[in-house]
Length: 290
Image (cartoon, rainbow, N blue to C red; front, side):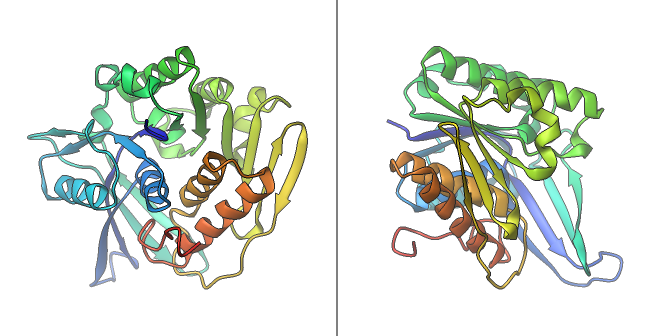
C-alpha cells in the first residue's frame, strides 16, 4: 500500500544572482509535490508521484532523481514534443528571491482528470494536493478535484497545502474560491500565516490546521487544542522549498503515529534542513540523520 499519493508539476529551476549581471547559475529540479515525495521516501515511507514531464533532458532529470530516491513513478507520463516547465530564481540582497515562471504550455501543466488513477489513490493511506497545482489551469484543477473525490469516496485521508502563488491566478477572488473549496475537503490543512484569509471557511475546530512561519516556528490546532514549536536556528543558504520540506516532515511523523507536538518538531527539522542547502530537496535527511 502507498503511504502518500501526490500529484503535481515537477520542473527545472535555475538559481542565480540578478540575471542581467550574473555569469553563473545553478540548475536543479523542484516542485512542492516533488519535494514532498523525496522527503517522505528518504524517511522510509512509500510515496507515489503523478505528473507529466516533457520528452526532454529536464524531464529525464526529474525521473532520474525520483527513481533514485525510491519514489514510485509508475504514473508519471512523458509527453514527447512537450517541454518541461522551468522557474528562474534571482537572489536579491535583503529580500526574497525574484521568481519568474516559465510554465505556460508545459507538459506538467497539461495534467488532466483522465491521468488520475482512481484505484491507486483509493489504495493509499493519504492523498496530498496543493493549491499551486490547482492554479496551473483548468485541466490541472479538475485533476486535483478528481483525486480528492476519489480519496473522499475511499475514505482516504486528504492533506492540502494552500501554496498560493499569485502569478498563477486570474484574480484573488478566484483563488479564494478554489483554495477554500479544496481546504474544506481536506482533513489536514497546511498554510502560511499570510494565507489564512484565503481559506477562512475551512478554519474550523474539527480540522487539523497547521500554520508554518519559517524560522519563527509553527503551530497546529488538533483535537481542539493548540500546539506550538519554535523554529531552529541554522545557517540559511536558500529558503526555497522549506515549507514543502516542513509538510513532508509533519506528514512523516503523522504516519508514524506521533503526537501533534512531535509532528511539528519533525516538520521544523526538515524545514531547517531545506534552508541549510542550496537545493529544495538535496539536503533533506534520512532516518539516520533524524
